[in-house]
Image (tube, rainbow, N blue to C red; front, top):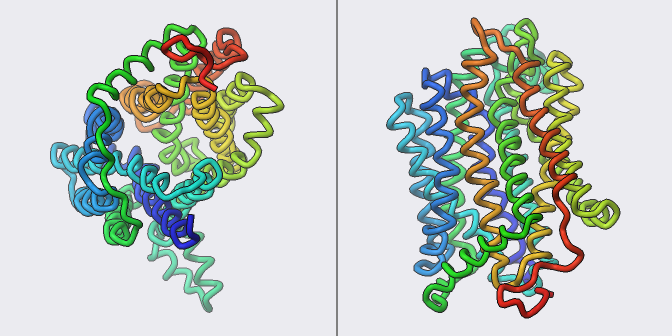
Length: 442
């Protein structure tokens, strides 16, 4: 692949995941501030997983077969950018839900479209895709940092009367917004996401031309899904599929609660992270994700599939336990964000590699879709319905949250999932036979 193409595709990934990373971390604390009920919050949050499930069956294939990929990308981010930008100026439930649904229905398919564009212009995807896809993780990290300078209490900066650039910068970084002021300023996450969408819409037209894919034999895709579902008859596949649902639930529990938790004042029992530092602190997990991916291959070789995934699940248990028992320790709460990268790489990335290794070639992509359905779809939906209810109706009384009780719930679920995987996940030494029974996939 030419170096110019590699940089273009890398930048495409940076912008693609910058958009998602800009609005997701703080939406969970923003929706209650608009007066939405727990049920209304769940419907808004579930626009993304609903779009993910729809995309797996309909919109991804429709886009692939009918449009040049770069043009579909441009259109989706133009209209989707308008929708996400509109959320900054919307405070009523139905318009907010409608705009979020429009954005997600257009945005979610572009994740696969970006992958399709990248693969279409690679000579050796196994070697070239990793560095290009890393742009997505970097984009997510970069999305956190503009808000260090947006969520600032400028009145306090002015009162401090800093002299010189260094003193002014120190004041800006020190006086972050909190409470209602931070919640109100969260609307800027949608403005930043919308502007990034417009940039990617224009940039998409500069990407290498990727024509529509020709349709295959009629019914082939449906048959592949059916054959992938049949693989669930293997106990080890079914166990991994169910545990993937649980781990996805834990992942989105982290996103549901962490932003609000980090910003909770120490007087209310939280760590009291300044508002302009919440997203950068959460981005530490993505930095660790990059580093962990470098050692994943060696870890799999040393520990094997099961132990590596168990370590990833136990990372959730450890992080939530720290939240529960040391909620006011800023240093420990910041440090434990590193675990997020371990949780992702050692479980989800390992699951993708495992499916690619063990599943028959003719159903491999559909099998990946089955697991994606749990990761982006049903696990996400479960967390978005349960987490707002637990936080606001069960563990919060008179605006005081019982963090120990709240965070022990996912910590114990993670421990149970790790034990279940350790006891019941026993993959065979050879890959699953092909659907025709003709032998191993490799």
